[in-house]
Image (cartoon, rainbow, N blue to C red; front, side, top):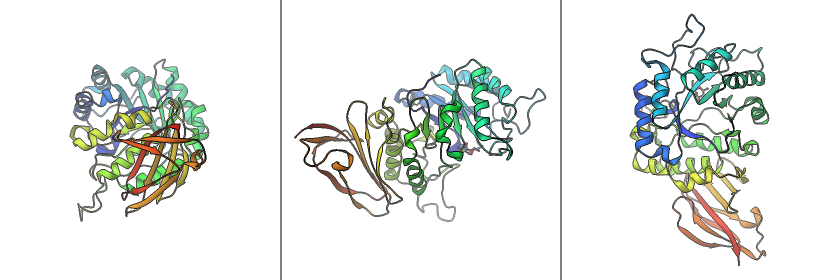
Length: 381
Ligand code: GAL
C-alpha cells in the first residue's frame, strides 16, 4: 500500500483516554459525516488504547472489552465502513500498552490477523513496556511484515516517540507514518515544543512515510484526557482560539498527519471551521510534500517557508511569546534577493484575503501565541 499524502482522521485518545465505547465511536462516525469532516478529508476513525480486556483469550487473541464494545470490533468496523470512513485501531510493540492492556510483542502475526479479520485499515503501534533486551527496529519490522502477511491494506502508523532517531529507519521498516515526539498536551507550550523539535527532522518526511507530530488538541479547551485544566482554578491558562489557529497552521505547514483529538460531537463553530479550512488543508495535502526551509526555531519564534507543488510558497511566522511581537522575514533569506526582478504576491492562508505585493520583506505584528501564514506566488516587479 502506498500513501501519497498525510493521513487525516480522528483519534479517541486526547479527549477520551480509557472512556471509549461502541456508542462513542458510532456517534463520532455519524458526526464525521454529518458535519463535513469526511468531505474535508478526515477519513480515518481511530480507537486508541484501552479497548480490550486486560488478558488475552484462551486462543491467544486480544479480546475487546465487552462492556465497552458489546458487539465486538467487527460490528464497529462495519458501522464505520458503512459511513464511508476507514477504521483504525491501536496496539503496542511492547508487552503491554501504555495503559497496561496486552501488547503485541511476540503476538504480532496473530494480532495483525485479528485486526485484518475485523476490517481494520490503520494500526497505530505504540512503544510502551518494550523489553530491554529486544530490538526496536526489528520489532517494528516484524509488525510491518505481519500486517503485509494479512493481505489487507493496513496503514502502519508507528509511534515510538522518535526514539533511536526513527526518522532514519521507520520508512524502510515499512511504516507509513512515524510519531517522532512524546505526547502532546492541550497547552501552547506543548504545541511549540513539538513544532520546534520536529522542525529539524522534517527532511525525512515525505510520500509513503510522514512525520507524525501527534494528534491535534484543537477544540479541547483544557478538557479531556490530555486537557490541562487546573482543578484549583479552572479558568487558568485555558487554550485560546489564537493558539489553536497556530497549532493547526503548524501541523498543516509541516505536513503532519492531521488527526483530530477533540470531541467532534461537541466542536464549536470556530474550531470546526478551522479544522475544515480548505486553504490550510490544501497546504497540508500538497503533492510535493516538501519539508519547510526553517529560518528560526526557538520557543519564542518559528519562522519558515515551504515550496508548494504549484510553484507558490507558504511563508509562516509564529510568535511563541506571551506578548504581541513585531516579526520579520527577509525574502532574501528564502532565495529572493532585493535586487531580483521579482516580487511575491500574497494571500492570507486562513482567509484567502489578497495581501498584495510583498517585496524585500514581510514585517508585522503577530499576536501573542499567534501566527501569520501567507501563500504567495512569484511575479515580475
Ligand atoms: C502513548 C502514546 C499516546 C497514546 C497513549 C495510550 O504512548 O504516545 O498517543 O496512544 O500511549 O496509552
